[in-house]
Length: 91
Image (cartoon, rainbow, N blue to C red; front, side, top):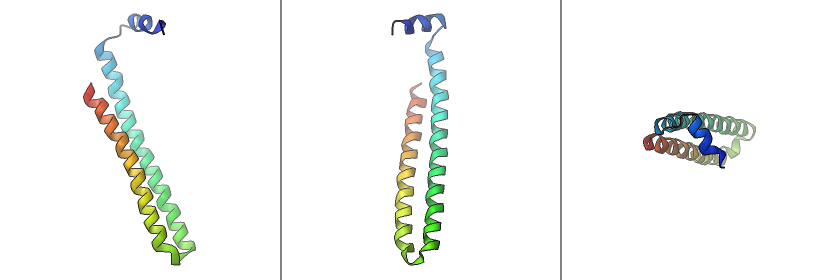
């Protein structure tokens, strides 16, 4: 770990430089969180539709479980966006 300060000094490390990387990371993190939630909820919806088509009498139970799972996925995505916003406002 003694090499890290030397590398920072050689690269002209500054507070603004660190802030720029943090802002870029926050943007990428928020974007990946939203993309992941979209893929997850799309998969849940597609598989729930297939399950209801195969067994229509269990449609109510499948629909309820799909809504619950979609809410959990959305909660994780919201957490990712909140963490990215905290990084964004820190710098």
